[in-house]
Image (tube, rainbow over all chains, first blue to last red; front, side):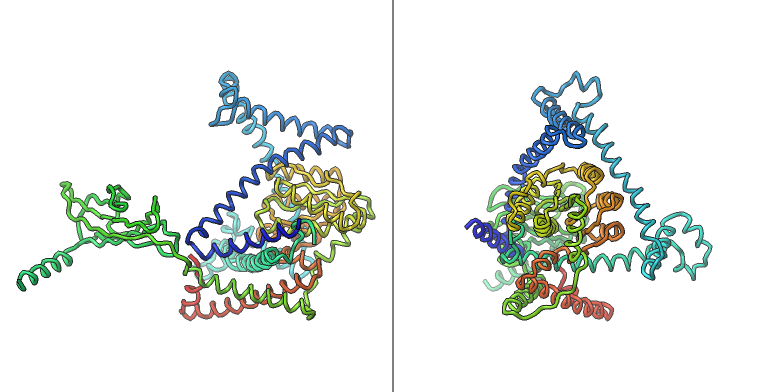
Length: 231
Length: 368
């Protein structure tokens, strides 16, 4: 019974959603939107589970003085601080339980929550994102070693695309006459990005779409049950 | 009498043909009866002000739209209900604010029981569904099906074994999207298989997640895997934990775990965006054996470069069926392959027809 009811719900909801794709008439036309709203409500309550998990796991590590336990204190303090100031003085357009905190806002120029969001959180986020540039360089270095024919082709294509996207690419081939304009590096770069790359990506997308159809059918028909926690 | 009738008809006809404004209101097709299409052509008159008004079921007229183009279309979707008569009027004024002409058009909004624009989608979906069901049945009655080897999935045993031998944990990342994304569900089904192996080999598994819904599902999946392996005592509920919903906050958390815990095997299965390379490169730097899988075409090159094995697109969705070895599930993979073959044929025919200037196949398959 514990298994059968979720399987039955999955089947019914899956079939209704498929049908509603083709029937605009009420109630089918509205069902997908309604179910999405239900999902959002459940997801809203699930946030509490996530926060409890965060507290539980971090408190456990601090309590048992696990390796690097000091980091977990910072996590919890940051969490408590942001939640508290958000509740007390609100965010940009919403007042908190103590109002808008005018005194603090006049001193630091904005609400405390927004101040921390703009000056701490966004900078930390930008720092993490900017790491990507260095990782791209290190990954590209490994990818562009010409060991095989395929990796050599990749290297050549990458050089053409990179040169084509810089002013150097235009300068190198800009002198070519109009009749040989197809050899202009920006044009070659555009061609590679527009045709072979797009074709490859679309092939992957079509394959993935079939994968999604197959997986969905397996789940709707109850053949695939591992998402429920078992075979 | 005859003369009067004739005069009346001639007068009506002259009025009809003297209309310089074309205006019509029609029910928007293939919808739930909540929209009306309005079309007009007032290019034959010189007007400075044009408006469209609407009367709902004999009520007061209210403004729908002020018009600034002599010819055009407008979709009225405001408070339209099916089964009610709406009378639309198109009025044009000259520069002296004198009404030049007013044209009315009445319409009933109707809800349709079938969206005819999606007929091609329905046909293709039915063909693929029938193919999948056929091969599932085929597999059920015991016919052998050949499924090509997927290196990334074959390596799961190797990765878990390596982690066990080294006494280090296994890290599983189910992507950064929520449960409403199929890639996350596919990732969680693979988590079940990895957790089962980890339970059998007595290896530690760490599953940091960035969505609360994924947290509860992943916990259930790992718990059931330990139960299935006959080792419920070894299950640690804190092995699956929530970090943050924030994309780069999550990356920072996972990177920290990789550098501190030094997992021997990393699995990145699900939907990833810009964080894919940051995670994969950190894992590479830590020396872990890495298996990734995603259907995000823009992130696949990063995984191919930084990971030992990569499940590309459909392979991610095939993983659960492939690993289960169940005939039912393998049959569905075969059905998918038939769908792909059909698509290749359709694409080839479509390319030939388009080059030849015949567009009916493209028009038929197009879903607006």
